[in-house]
Length: 326
Ligand code: SF4
Image (tube, rainbow, N blue to C red; front, side, top):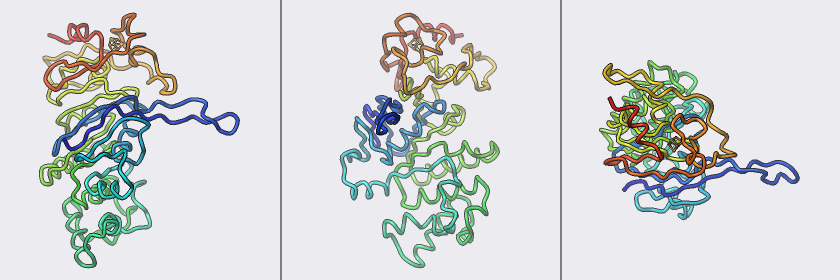
């Protein structure tokens, strides 16, 4: 297994009062477990505030978890030394949502793309310049844009520059945190196609994070649905229309379905995600769930098998199934 995340927990203190002591905690990630094989894409989907971006930063160790294990290529990312982590980062890269904010406006595109090569002391002079041109060409930009600055490019082009920097060290895995959500719809497809082309050419695995279930379904082999810091359903992308968790059904209900023989009977989501400071007891989805029963308010449902590679955390999947079966 390339990436394994086991029972990872991350809380952030809310400081206030005398001497800025913690008065509460934001429960951003609450016991998440997942895995990614080499060359596959695991999509993680959920509304904003569900902990996806925190999970992305935990996976690449920009944040340290409070509890749990993260292993990459057999190496322990939580306990490893700073120098070991630096070496692992050659193989584990991240692409951020905001292609402008993540590129230094004072550096040329060539310097931005070359930065990982410089940090890891790979190549020099002309060899490094040729590699940068090769990378820019690989992401659909011309090699001769290397002397220009980020502000001279469109959003889609800037995201291509971010991707060129992420693949510079030929990583085994890229965590892509909302990589297309800041882009126009017309450009989103081009960047998604680029990511999929690079996966075919370079056998890169992706953890692809987005709030749009349609986008996630387009690029993923497997999908994990996240709600209030927990995975509530995990299933193969081709089985997405057979999802059994009420939250996944509600996300699907917001998307127009191309197949006229299928009718989505779940209502699109109402209300907001509850505060991650005061988590609801029992099932975290119960305040918004139309299927809830009394025990949902007290008993947290376990993530249980529903079929091959399919797990869902709901006490009443039978009621959901009765609603969605033709
Ligand atoms: Fe809804 Fe209960 Fe299932 Fe939670 S466990 S999703 S509240 S039916």
